[in-house]
Length: 73
Image 1 (cartoon, rainbow, N blue to C red):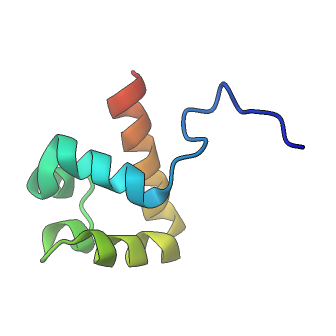
Image 2 (cartoon, helix red, strand yellow):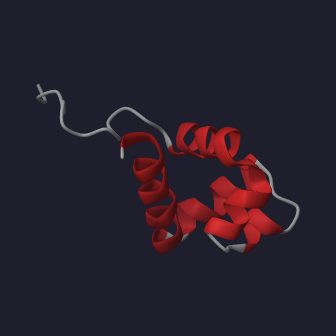
């Protein structure tokens, strides 16, 4: 059985939950200015953004890092 990851703030969070929290906090417009990727700036939606982020590791890393800075700094 795996040990709990008490020191990992991302443990148990899905990419969808992270994205939804960032959109709720910043809104699409501000999020697109912070992380300039087309799925945030041109007709954004959760589903289209998830498809892109799941295929693009560098973009996903930017989103996860922003989440950590926003909610844990």
